[in-house]
Length: 157
Image 1 (spheres, helix red, strand yellow):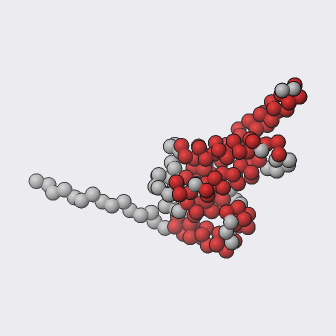
Image 2 (cartoon, helix red, strand yellow; image 1 turned 60 degrees about the vertical axis):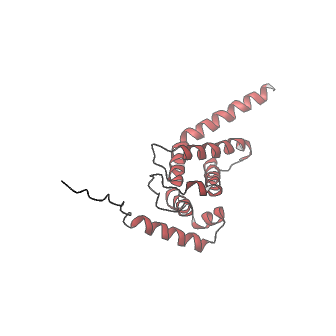
Image 3 (cartoon, one colour; image 1 turned 135 degrees about the vertical axis):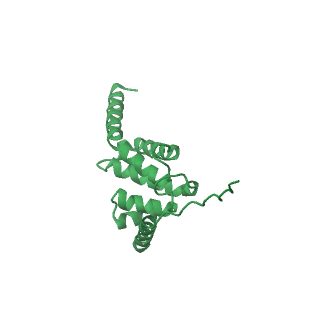
């Protein structure tokens, strides 16, 4: 490896480290919302984010003016969508009542502020469908959470 390649590699690593330092917290929160895990116990969200960041790092030199945050968010959403069946179990997160598709759309639209058109293009649905799913997810989150079943009362003797 030449000295020039070494210098370029170090610069690339510094740039990427700076990006991760600034963006990882928000991206991890988005991944945690997607996986419906509690914030303090989110191994699936961490795995999802690590894979998305690894992909961004691999493409770092080819970004050429693209926003690395947007690319990482797109990769995070795509990875979640491809494996959403894994995240359907109730885990205790704030969005656990929603389906994986509802969580994906709600996180992209409301948490990340991605436009309906971009969200639709990213996940391959018509804009009207994205709008309807988002409205349904919001209504579901506004409704009262289901009450857990009560244990039968024990007789006092």
